[in-house]
Image (cartoon, rainbow, N blue to C red; front, top):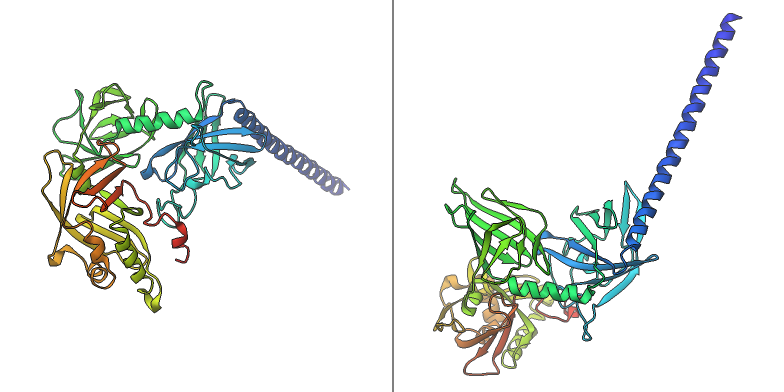
Length: 452
């Protein structure tokens, strides 16, 4: 009998313990779920607290730098504006001076923390995350590597810190002041970028270690600090930045040969710009001539920017290419460049099957650097095999002869760092070609590429 009572007591104890454990688990689950909902609602309320919207410092692929994106949350809808990146981006400022915007759905949800998701297509915002960017930026399968889902790391009425769910970039959002319009943010950033832009800089200043020379190259919104260290090793330090009204804000501080650098101030002169964290360090800007720009950079040739003299020559080549591929398929020109690629100065094509190039040299450069003659390289090392094929078989010779063997007057929009250079033949004004900084598809009409 005692044994039976003992076993009965043990069973009751176990049952009581199990019941207690189940009750605690249920309470824990309920508490966790409730906590998640409360956090989501707290973030939602914060999103609504900025009457003029939020300014997002947006980064995708950091080699393209950061961009200003404006957001206003209302109910389950978000209205978004942005700096305009390229021609196919629905963004920027319209003809009436207002910011161009797109409105779409957003949601907050729980997934290992609170997630802010822009879950409905938005012409302005999803430009950054499209796999195949419509302006050809980034890779063809990942575009600008932008996110549209973000983990909320911290949220208050003063700032919201996000992390891209896929690519893990830090994204900062701050309330837009009441006296700022979205258009003014875009306009001021453009003015600052124009004012501070330079094809290259040199690091100097009272705190500069002058034992080595540090050259700084600029491409898109990224600075590249290049130098040879004490061990004779070449170093390149990359500093992505976003443009604000008062200068450049780095994504994060960088260390260059023992010197910590963090952003640049616009200041009152475009001869140099001091660093935000150390006024004794600065970047001296450099003003190259247009001839230097043309022969040291890589410039995009666009079909829409060819003059009356050159257009029919390129038309003839594209007609030849319609049946030049395997089984008489069309070869399409994706990019056409003038300048330096792979240390070769010439005209370079990137097509659906090949990468032909044909080099040139220069002469008769004027003292001011606004006049130049391009001379075709006729040596065996002046082109590759694909270049020779296109030259002989596909009428590329006539296209090149619009540029090579001609003397051009060079003009641009901003001499310190042009967004384009217009080459006008001094002997034939119909032979005018504008080349562009940055990468653009050869054809602006995207239907040209749809079959490939």
